[in-house]
Image (cartoon, rainbow, N blue to C red):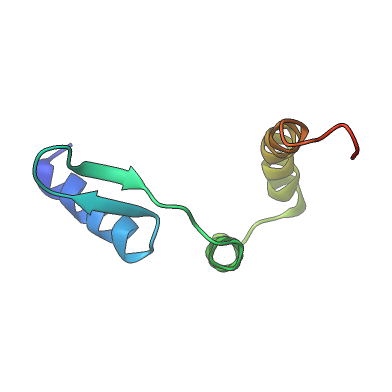
Length: 80
């Protein structure tokens, strides 16, 4: 993959608010925290343009749901 391709991809991700880039010592690309509303907007666009069918949705859920459950389980407190 060429440097130009990487730069263009980086610019697109930064324009979408998914990463932040910093130059200089300690610089680089860093994943940016994305709000719930922004996540919903990005996923909505993805679903709209991908023309997904029910099997595709099932596959997405199969991948995401264990991750979500694991993440939530790590945040539980004894009184929940």
